[in-house]
Image (cartoon, rainbow, N blue to C red):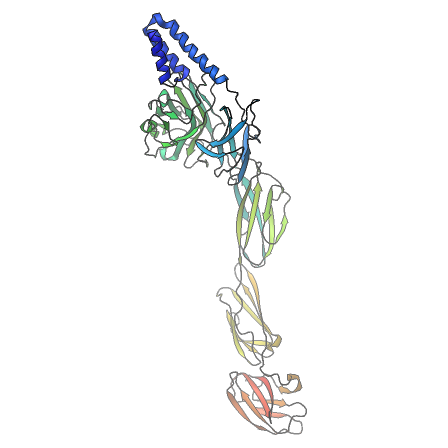
Length: 581
């Protein structure tokens, strides 16, 4: 009887320490005190039966998450996803009073409906825990597949075109595969079993070997287990080389939140995220074990990553858990092997995700200016004419319903404007130019003539009829032919009488010109010639002959534009003239 009391005290002071550990302790006593073996074993069975009965008195609810398809939920990165747990049920007479949503050790939200944004592509474990008013709980863990952005390539016939030109664009969109093993890797069984989980990798060059441990970013597990000191974790590469990630030690420290009392039929608890890295200085699991729960994080491995040098990168990589104690178990929810220069893998739980992309116009669309045509499957377009730099955007939709876009800029060479005075007067010599210096320059003028500069970026124009005149340049370079036009707007400065009612000829004049005033103009009047800034260049008194024509000598005037004025008793006529010897 004294011995039985001792065993009861052991059970009460270790939280009943799970049936397996108590059974092992009793078996130890059995070996020491053979005569008391039967009552001790009976006592252990009574404790197990009593615990099972207590568990059975609670009517368990059933957690349920709406929208699960093929065992998965699907989401788009960076987009709000809504999850509904209101379809969870419970036994008659009980009601669900709380809904708790978790991802690893992190509580995301409370309530029957939860919204969350997954930023990283890959697989994320989502757990719903429902609890009744009787304190009974049930959980459901589902993998959320978050779509990986496809690799979109846009190709243009030319990314820099001449103004008024056209361009065609085509696209190629490939879905990237994020890789690791399945959603729930499986239970970590007790001694003497070894739990192994394989991961197939084929993304590297054929025959490529691991020559630098720095290429391995991390080895990660999402797991739960009681008693860190129970087991050994090893990593084996495709050619059989291996390294020890963890070798017992750590005593009763927990990993994640284990589901106790599930010996023989393991049920996953809450998995936490743990990694080993060749670069961290955070110490091993054992170095950080405190007897509570090991925090999620990145740790050093028990043996050096250099044990994997020479491993083939492609092939089957295996992580193995060897439980060396005949009690307590755990669960591996997922695991991950990340390479620095390998396929992109998120920091959470990647799985094999390669959502297919649509192949028609219902899944592929373009936007941008002046789109002229699209091929039958919307994989290419042609646009034009383009007068300004333009951006074209391709949007593809995958089977998850996620939209991804890529854009391409098309540069359009915009020619400069012709610089110069657009308000010349008759007889004016004006310079016109553009800032380009290369290429062929061909100028032409309406309402005037080119005085000099043809074939260069700058010309001088002598205007004779600028009112509706214009100057045009055709510029040819290695890439483009551009036509530039600058229209004139004449300002003669005198509007007292229309020029059509009196005549001055010839225009342009050489040594002399003749002016014929309108009918009714006095027979004697004064005349004056001024330059374009109003300086007097000559003048006098005119007496017309019988034909009313005045002759004025202009031989002493330099070439250029002038203004001829006639005046008499407050009346004034003015007319632009050109002198060209």
